[in-house]
Amino acid sequence: MKSISQSAWPAALRDPSGNREPVCGTGGGLDSRTAGRGQTMVIDKGLGRHAFADLLETAGPYIDCVKFGFGTAPLYPADVLLAKIGLAKRAGLTVMPGGTLLEAAVRQNAVPAFFESVCRFGFNGIEVSDGTIELDRKQRTALIQEGLRNGLRVVTEYGKKLTGSVVDADELLFTAEADWLAGADMVTVEARESGVGVGLFDRNGDCALSELETIGRTLGDIGRIMWETPLKQQQVLLLSAFGAEANLGNIQPSEVLSLETMRRGLRSDTFHFGKRVEPFVYMI
View (cartoon, rainbow, N blue to C red):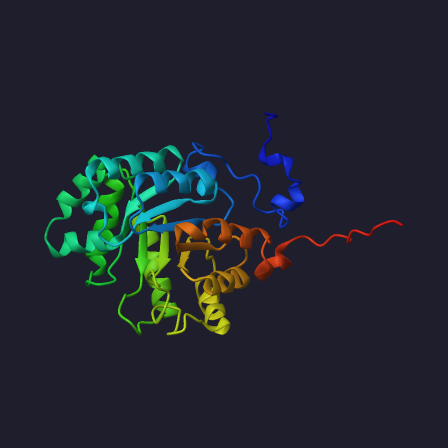
């Protein structure tokens, strides 16, 4: 069979925007994968090793981080968990347990054991959050710095999981700046896995563009902010507001390629991202 590669497609059809190519293949390492392009974080709520391998085979180059949602990590058989972490790391991804697991460790007075287990299993990242518990500034900073001491990439999260909680732009800015000063790499804005009735989004999963613009003006640089956007309408909104390079999280595994088409202008919702050229005219 004749060998054929992805480059058999014209560049204008692989990436009409001209901003997403080239994307490093697997094994490129975190820095080379994420440099200069918006990141995509996937929430994994229980994929088996084969489904996880299939995800990386088809969409791995368009994923930057995988979060094993909530407190699912300790529930996997150890060999399955090790296999998934190994696959993710070989693909050059950040792989981390959900922030709720660290919150449980705080609640159960098991923080040292949490970090020991995270390192033993080979995770290379953690999420520090207080969506369910209360952390004062000193505790939050200490957890960030403990993650760094263990050689982990630290992502933090702003916002509460309680239905009806909202984003306060000034509070988000204060939290983000303090987290970055403590050593966090990125700050995620909470929207849960549902994207409904929490954070930026109302009970229908919608958000006013004016509200986003206010938050964007307050933050200034949003390059180190990740927006949880589990629903398509939310992804379209954030991409439209902040551009194709917006960092988006809590993406369902089955939606990774769909999101990447929107980033590139290969889907109707963001078709305008593609560069305008003279239309093709048939010569008669």
